[in-house]
Amino acid sequence: MNALNTTANINDPDGFYAELIAAHQGLSDDESEALNARLILTLANHIGDREVLREALAVAAKKE
Image 1 (tube, rainbow, N blue to C red):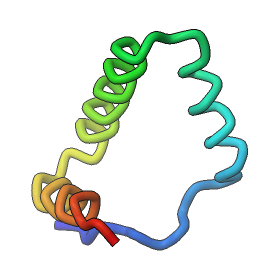
Image 2 (tube, one colour):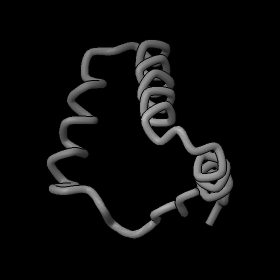
Image 3 (cartoon, rainbow, N blue to C red):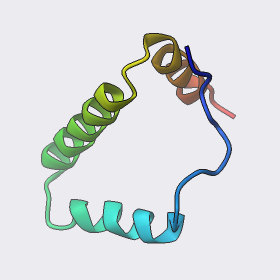
C-alpha cells in the first residue's frame, strides 16, 4: 500500500494547468463537469489503490 503524495510532484505544473484550462474552453458547464468526472475516474483507475483514493477524498473534502 502506498501513501498519498501531497507534495508538489507534477513536472511543469503551470503547463499542466494551462492544458487543463484549455481542455475546458468552449464547453458548457455540463460538458465541463463531465470532463472533470472522466478525468477523476481515469486518474483514480490509474492510481488503483483504494486506501490512497480514500485518503485523497478526505484531503479534497477538507475546506481550509
